[in-house]
Image (cartoon, rainbow, N blue to C red; front, side, top):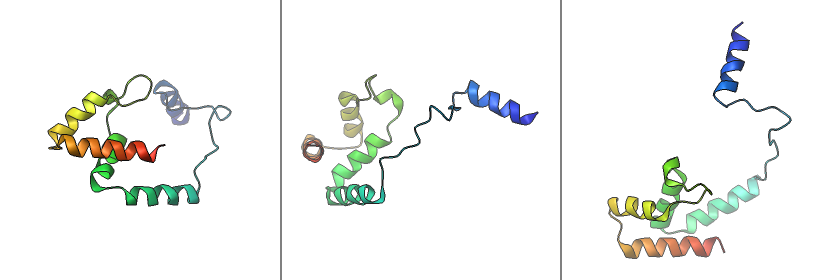
Length: 99
């Protein structure tokens, strides 16, 4: 009886995915992980911190299209004591990385 109850909870809370609809193919491989790790290690300390912040932001900081609300992010950085020069340098470094 508990098995069907747990299955019902998974459906109710949205954690259940039908096996046919699940995306089980991954584009990540050990080589791509190593390349990404090397890129991150070459970044400045501020840019790594910015990247960490963006990856750990709450959902409220994202727009509906999945992009970060830049003004809110700037407010968070200012609260953390970043100068405009540090912000501009880190954003520029990230832009160069994704080109």
